[in-house]
Image 1 (cartoon, rainbow, N blue to C red):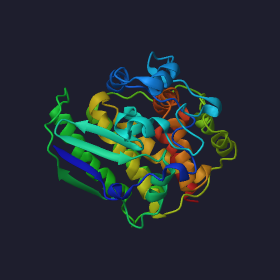
Image 2 (cartoon, rainbow, N blue to C red; image 1 turned 180 degrees about the vertical axis):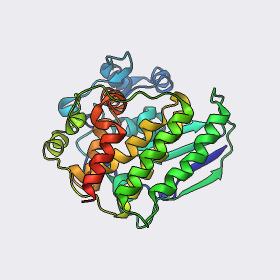
Image 3 (cartoon, rainbow, N blue to C red; image 1 turned 180 degrees about the horizontal axis):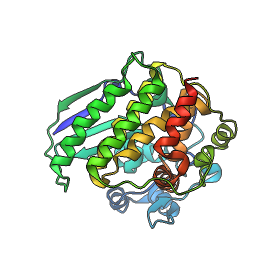
Image 4 (tube, rainbow, N blue to C red; image 1 turned 60 degrees about the vertical axis):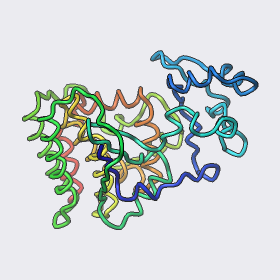
Length: 322
């Protein structure tokens, strides 16, 4: 199998208790079946403690019931994990073992990246001095069985390279590049499937007022957001590349490439309008990408909200150039 990662991926290291915003606070953690089966083999106080906090969410998933201030019930006063200490990190839930990594597997290729939701990872991406690049290597694992249409997959792989090149063309202003990326997204979408956008009335900034709030600081960002000039700084290129890397190829499953392109463009707008720093992207990602409820709403609005139509997004970008 081929493993593809961003070039900086190998440099990531969790700073545990020194993190400015613990990943063990604010959101629920699913208890995956493999971990649950292992917990059944345990005895003693750790087993009793695990059993006492297992719960179900509104989607029927088994989760760990949060403690006060939405802290994980195993997060101790030093912001370290008591479960990790008691039974080893390899036996913590899948989400905990992999965070902040995201993993997409397409048959014989696996792609792994780092999410903006981790402040350390977000800082790493913002501190890159050059456009994001990727490395790949062969790993000793067989391809995963899938129902992916091979022709569509290879079409998207080739198209993604062009999307990267549009974003990273520094001979043009970033707003021009993002506008061209939207046009390219429309072209790709026409070759994949019908796409009916618009019809839902909502103000642009109201799109980001998520129903499920994790950190009130994020709401303050939204309340104080303003449409501003988008700079040509390399971090704006890398924000777009992050979204393209993370979501573009997943269109092989739903044939909705235009929404993925919109996410890349709007991601740059979010950063500029809400704070223009890595902390802003960290907050948005934690609030949106890691809340199933918020993310499902956002994905719907990418298609249905009039304010997120290609025409309207391009109009906003055009205003930025003035």
